[in-house]
Image: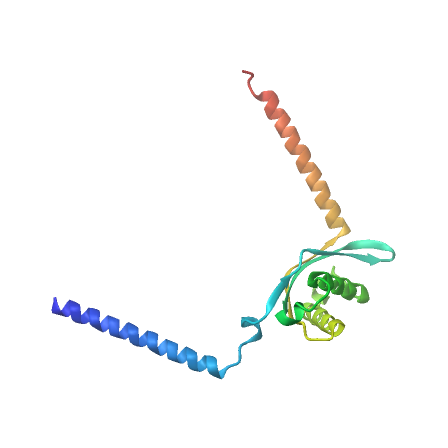
Amino acid sequence: MIKFIAAALWICAVTLGAVFYSFQAASQRGAAEPPKPMLGGLDYVKTDMISVPLLRDGRIDGYFLTKLVYTVEPAEIKKLSIPAQALMTDQVYSYLYSNPQIDFTKKESIDLDAFRRSIRDTINTRIGVELVHEVLIDQVNFLSKDDIRDNALRRRRGAGETAAAMTKAFKAAPEH
């Protein structure tokens, strides 16, 4: 019984010592390092799906689809007189239409880092202060006109097959 009590006291002492040490180490490290920009102090603005039609030779070639997240200064975003999401959507359109050389059919030629930097820098330049710290990509896709047509045909076929199966099941069901 005495061994059991001694072991329990030893475990308690070791646990208390470890907790005390971890708090001491954390407070010393926290005082020495400035907080990282992605770890706090910034707000996040998440856009809805942005769909930008891409035009080539006067016709629509496809659609660039993206959802973005912006890390912004909370004090600066409160000063905006227009909604932040509208400003950011406008910058995506402006970037894509001012860079017609981007070919979304060739994934290896797309520079997402340049896209993010350009969106951030143009927003900050347009506003006149450092509003956006980072542009994060939540989702990015490109759908060509053919992809959209194929998806529409598949949906129509699927709906037609479902309706035919339901009609067949309804006719085969016994009457009560």
